[in-house]
Length: 248
Image 1 (cartoon, rainbow, N blue to C red):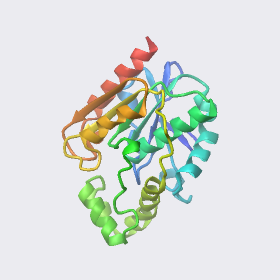
Image 2 (image 1 turned 135 degrees about the vertical axis):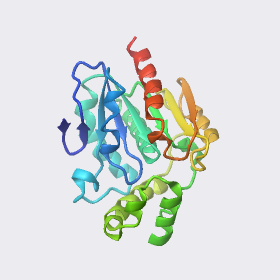
Image 3 (image 1 turned 120 degrees about the horizontal axis):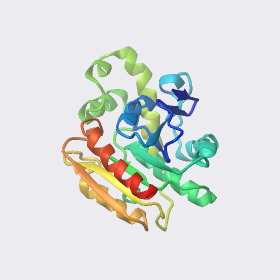
C-alpha cells in the first residue's frame, strides 16, 4: 500500500495506463474504495482522503469548497501529471470531483479523461442539501433514513461524537458551494443513479448532460442512495469499459 496524507493506493499498479481518483461521500473515507482494484486490474485506484477521518481523524474537516479545492490542487498536482487519470465520486464526492475538474480547466492543468458521478444530481440543478444546519437529533434521523450509516454507529454516542462534526462539515461544504459556471465542461460524464434514491433521482442524474460538451452516459440501478455498495462489480465493469475505450 502507498499512502500519504491525501491519497491512499491499496495496490500500486505502476504499469496501469490510467489512474482513477476516488472521492468520498459525506462522512466517508478512503477505505470505501480499498477493494476496488480487484475489479479494475488495468487501473491504479487512488482513494482521496479528506481531513477529519480515518488516518486524518485529528485534523479539522474542511467545510468550504473553495478552500478544499485549493488544498486538493496543491496535493494532487504532481500525481495528475504522471499519467492519464479519471475522477470518481459518490454523492458529495461527485460534487467535489466536478468542482475540481472545473478548477483544473480554469488553471490549464491536465484534465480527467472521464468524470464518474455517482448518487449525485447534476450540479446546475442546485438541489438543496438536507439537514446540514439541523440540530444533532434531526441530523441523526436524516442519516438513519438515508441508510448509509451502520445502526451500531448511529446507536453509539461515542462514535457519533466523532462522526457528526465531519458529516456536518461535509454537508456544509456542499450546501454553501455556489455553482458559478455559465458554460459546460469538456470532460465526458458517466452518471450513476438508483431507482429509489429521492435525492439523486435518475432524472436528476440525466441532467448531467448539460454539464459537458462531451459524451454523457447514465446508468441506473435498483436500490437507495448507497446503491454503490450493492452494485460495485457492475458499476466498476462500466467504468472499466469507459477507461479502456479511452486507452484504445
